[in-house]
Image (cartoon, rainbow, N blue to C red; front, side):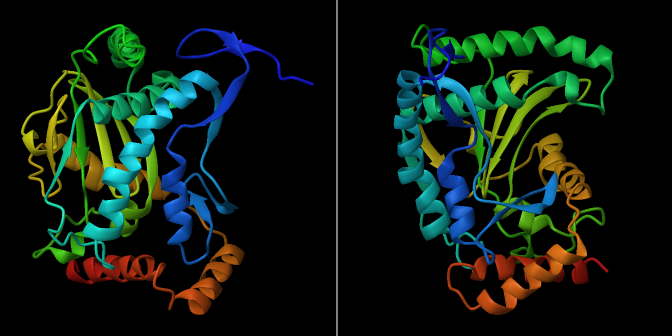
Length: 309
């Protein structure tokens, strides 16, 4: 029996839809392959071991294949080289890959990623830390942004709209010197390197879409359309992307290093039974070369904790 026809969210054709990964599958595969337990755990349901990240019936076969071409390029040219060559076992950048050349395919990948996130998980109404007045202020702009991204992916326009896109490459904070803020998360390095996350970041003055794929962060400005003091991470139609970046935008730094990790791990509740399983896995598999980074990140978080006492 054939599946019921539905409308493709991108091309609007009524046909059988494929299950689409919202965050690329290769991110989940890397996290599993380098995990002590061999499983994934989501922040919102930490007691549930998982084999994959979320999928939804979103695109027709043609649109799915169209977006997958650039996804493959991102995996081969950026993600895998960065996690396997640039970052060492402590998740510290080695300076081996200082710049990454790219052209239009990278912007197409980022827009495709952010469009999927915003379409499926970007409901501003579900955000409870801002007033309805602020939500109403941005509703029209979010709709305009989605339309611009959709038209760009369908090749109906040459640019992706007013909003700029940024790619960040965080690394182990314990490698730096000095004391970090007192309110930094006790799991900051675990979050920066090994989490998958996406959300709208909203204040009275700005809104941007934030998506995290392990140690690579994508930020798409919605309003205003450009973020200050982030030239090293700004994505263009063509250019060279620096992996060693100056992160001077205070609101972005506050969100990435303080607010989001703390908010995320408030939801990360592991039962005593599950904690015993994790500790057992660590004892049996900690010697694995692939999972060494996860062990060292836990040690790094302890180093930061001791440093901040």
